[in-house]
Amino acid sequence: MKLNGNTVLITGGSAGIGLALAERLAGLGNTVIICGRRENRLEEARKKVPGLNTFMCDVSKDEDRKRLANWIKEDFPDMNMLVNNAGIQLKVDLKKGISGLAGNDEIGINLTAVIHLSVLFIPLLSAKNEAAILNVSSGLGIIPRAMYPIYSATKAGVRSFTKTLRYQLKDTPVKVFDVIPPLVHDTELHYGKLLERTDNSVSASEMADAVIEGLKEDRYEIAAGPAKNWLNAASNAQLEQMFDNINR
Ligand SMILES: NC(=O)c1ccc[n+]([C@@H]2O[C@H](COP(=O)([O-])OP(=O)(O)OC[C@H]3O[C@@H](n4cnc5c(N)ncnc54)[C@H](OP(=O)(O)O)[C@@H]3O)[C@@H](O)[C@H]2O)c1
Image (cartoon, rainbow, N blue to C red; front, side):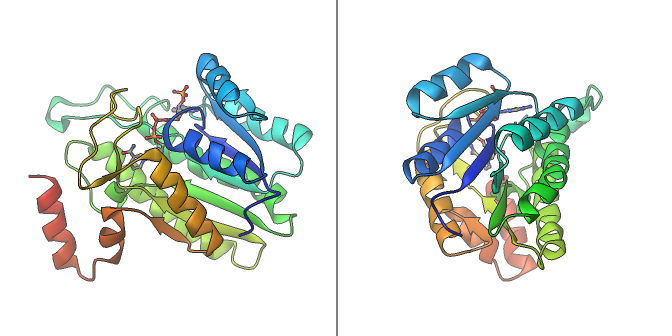
């Protein structure tokens, strides 16, 4: 995938991995648009990244997804890259029950939005010479973490959807990438709390670098840190062992 001259929409680009990627791509000479729910965070991002375009929306809402797609078609018809990055992660004790699945939850944000936005943008992207969809899944989509049961299920869903999307779009100009971060310690995903670096984590900036490298090489599964080992685990026995390790 070429790395400059693209017009890129990054959902959830006002913080964390999305913002780091927005900075990288803007610096390489791409037009970058980000969206998020909080206007103050979009404004901070605009101050940090010169030339950044922003749109306030909640990707868990059907009407906001359609509003976003219509705005892009009108104002940025050259858009040729979609990065489905927005996500949330919640600890859930399944024994205590869950308070209903309302749509604005992990499934709505992490999975439904990824599917719906990908489909909404296929016509626009397919009309370009070169285009891409990047779906940000997670190492926990390969090996689930028991304290994040719904999150892990949504990320396994994103990985599965991304594979079938890639297959269905194989005869179009749209390249489909699965971005698979391991633990990224310096983002707000973990209840807004930045974590200390560990042997198993990478920074948002390092993750953005990995994405740029992966795009350059057309590597359709872009993993970093330990997620690389998880992706390359040869057998179910190895995956079971890794499951035991991360859930200890
Ligand atoms: N950090 C990790 O350890 C890690 C590991 C593996 C995968 N990932 C994945 O990487 C992606 C980015 O995570 P991150 O760590 O960078 O998280 P983050 O720092 O919390 O950033 C999340 C971004 O998504 C936006 N967002 C959340 N819900 C949204 C919604 N309903 N509509 C629109 N925007 C929304 C947030 O802005 P607003 O809150 O203002 O909307 C923010 O810009 C997620 O998909 C996450 O699952 C992260």
